[in-house]
Each structure stands twice: as C-alpha cells, then as structure tokens.
Length: 235
Image 1 (cartoon, rainbow, N blue to C red):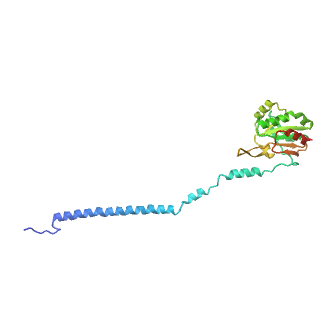
Image 2: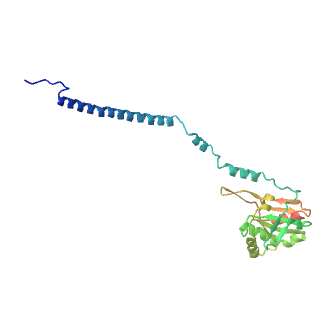
Image 3: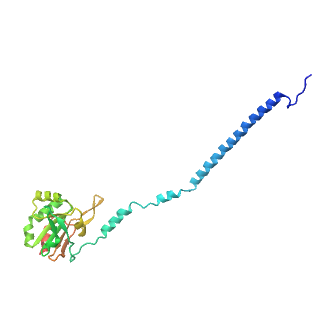
C-alpha cells in the first residue's frame, strides 16, 4: 500500500541530509578555531622561553655599559692633588688683584720690599677675625722689619670693605674671587668637616723676600701665636 521512496526522491530525507551537512560545516570551522587558539599559546610560550633563556635586546647592553658618574669627581680631585706646592726658594707667583678699596695691587710693584701674604677662608668669621686683628695690632713691628702685609681670600671687594671697616684694619685685603692667586699658591685644598669633604682655602701664610723669592711658608696656621712666628721669620 505504501510506496517506498529512495532518499533522492524523498524531499524530507534530502532536507535532513542538507541540515546535517550544514551542522557539520560549523563543527569543522570550530575545530579550526580551536586549533588556532592552541597554536597561540605556543607562540607566547616561545617568547617566555626566550626571556627565561637570558636573551636580551642588544640596545639594553649598550645602556648598561654607560660611563659611571663617579669618574669626573675623582678626576677633579686627582688634578687638585697633583698641583705642585711651593717651596722655600721658589719664585713667588705673580698676582694682580683689587684690594678692599678697589685699588689694583700688582706684585711687580712690590719688588725691593719684604711681603707677608696670609690666606684665610672667610671675612668676619671667628678665626679669621682673630688673625686679622693680630696683624692690625702688630703693624708697627712689621713696618720696622720693612715688611708689607696683605690678607687674601675669595670674598668680594665689598665684603672686604665691610670687614676692614668693622675691625678698623690698617692693611689691605685682596679679593681673589676667581681663585687664581689662591690656586697658584697651592692653598685651595680638600677639607673635611664632620665627615663631609669639600674644597676651600687652607689657612696659610707666605713670607716673600725683596727679590720675589719665598722666604718662609706657614701651612695649616693656628691663629693663636701666629703673628710672633711671622715676626720671627722676618728677622
């Protein structure tokens, strides 16, 4: 009674086959996507292995081989330490500096006279004031010895003027703001205070003969009793 239809003839069968074919298509595409997703971790794992193996960008090596910053200060200290120091009998370095009135003092004009040059750190400080006042009070004895005295620091002319007026100093103070004379006489040195190192003037007195040669050098001066030492050196 019922007629048997082949799958090719049965429209319902063909529809079922088509539906199955469509379902298989997305399944295959999903498997490809899964395969791609699995491949992606392999690439990331390769990168992580590269990092773990110690592989670095060459530019990173160039940055790590930069010159240390500590070399420049070390070179500056070595140049300062290598500066030759004056000795007795050497020719005193020439100088030309303004005094506390603005008048220029040239060493060439001082030939034929004994000269006392004392270097001090700073105007109107306790030790420097004591030293200046000792030369002030003994100026007549210095003159009897035929000597002139000059104080030298890196302070300005105006600072010298105030310092001189305040303590009524009766001799010139030379202003060496460029530190040319200070360095030429070898008194710009490394100092230490409470463990901190810095550059500054080492308190020093130089006695110069009439012919411009160095007669006596007093390094690291202690101000108490120093004037008597200078007076003795002039005799």
